[in-house]
Length: 312
Image 1 (spheres, rainbow, N blue to C red):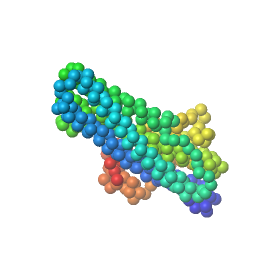
Image 2: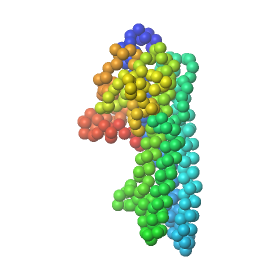
Image 3: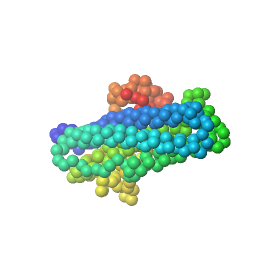
Image 4: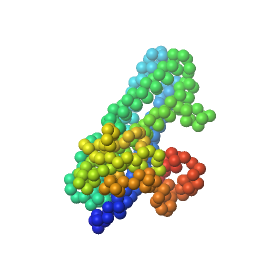
């Protein structure tokens, strides 16, 4: 952003909006890469459980049901602890890198060489993400134990367990008990990743409170959600009695705080239709050729168009 544009508030506003939303798209895309890695960890855990069942059917068939349940519970406990460590170590590494990248981006974009912003550890809508992760791991453990116990008590056999833990061929192995948890864990880590970056942005804007007086929560992609004007108070966006408990208002949100330099620069229509107003070459760069053509035809939903799962 050029210092010469400081005398032109409308041009400066357009530049600020473009800078933030373009950068946020790269963050959204990377959040899907984070989700893909989380899925990889979970699939590894799932395969280990399936292998345990296969080995158990050969090695422990003469053990009592209680002994088999105890042995399985013990192995599952160890594997869940390892899974949690993989989740947390990976996410800690990713967040450490991207926190630095975010700060460097903001300092460069807004030509700021002062103090670094202060911010808290990753959270989900104001709740420490470790707490949410622990609750969902506990829920998954209960589901695993319940299915294993049911199979033994009612004599369902290993075929029943394999269908529950691995899924069935007829449904391309998409119907295992881990499908729900895969969705939960990817949502947890995508949201925690994006919320942490938004938290840094709010903290950075607070350092420049004389320059940035108001903000709006904006998605870079077309959205039907209301776009409101907020002031920043104690690192929270406030509009009358409305106040967010965290930088994101819901899971998987694509919105991010955009500084509004002057109240007269606040243009709801332009903010809500930002992506559609960008050059088509830019849209194709963001979406890829195939997705871009579907976007132009309007034959696919927004949630599908702007889902970057498995994209590079």
